[in-house]
Length: 161
Picture 1 (cartoon, rainbow, N blue to C red):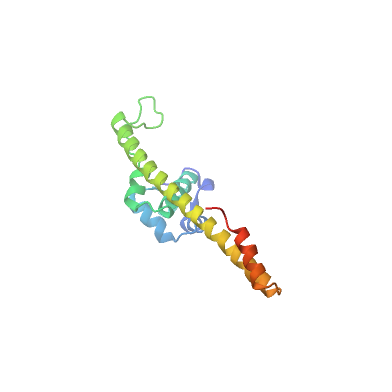
Picture 2: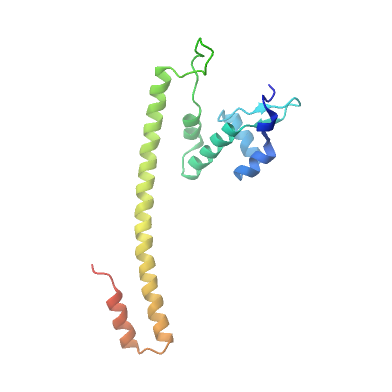
């Protein structure tokens, strides 16, 4: 297969650089069926913007902890048949239902991850406040403030339980 419009495609090296991965990663994602790049006359892989978008989404999903199996299932949308009018192929109701189940499951996983990150941020903010109080105490002591006054100021800065 040759590229339909070479001006709108980029090489493996350029695609990898744009996405911040190695060319081998792109080849592996191709082997998984996540993308199917067009080929040049010489057989080189060429990536279109849609390929880059799909790869970027896959990489974001991986960074959020989704397995490659899940990423592949999410991004491979099996086409059942081309419509008789020559338009874009469409998914059957069976495929759409399967995709809905996968998307719902992954959305639940992502919702749980977001909740976990929010808890971690809350804990980090509490620790940050404590460290600021500690730093303030140390700075007051280094400035020559008596221990009792510095401790009293630190107690006043403590949040209410």
